[in-house]
Image 1 (cartoon, rainbow, N blue to C red):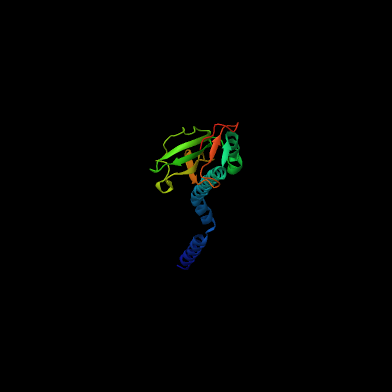
Image 2: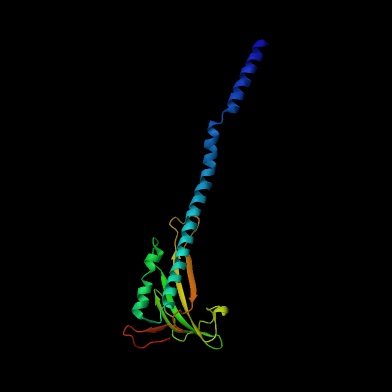
Length: 196
């Protein structure tokens, strides 16, 4: 009987020691949570980069529109030079697939918006006198004025593509009031044939 009690006591102590062993639990818990952490990390990186590209795109549109709105008269090559700021504005991200357009929009007495002139890089410019009333918000359509509309478009493709799958189309459209005159004129490179 005493022998059986000792064996039972020894077995209970060993079982107690086994129950207190938790060295492998951390490894099991880590292996269960690691895939979730990796997905969260990749998703965070992809979303952060997409937001960064979108913010830089907004800054590019603001810079293009602001530089045009600060001018009284531009020639074609001036607008081309303004478009040349894109690589610096989007650095370190790629400018492949980037599309830019800047347009002077006249608002008539009936609050209709028509294009006075338009220049583009990587896309088609608006035709002169094309209606853009649906594009310009009503609050910006002040009768008998001109506004400058800057538009930029790009496609963001994530490096990993695990959380954000496929390409995302990013765009921005900003409006500016001419600063130094009522209108901004655009002339050909010879300085003739101006439109405003």
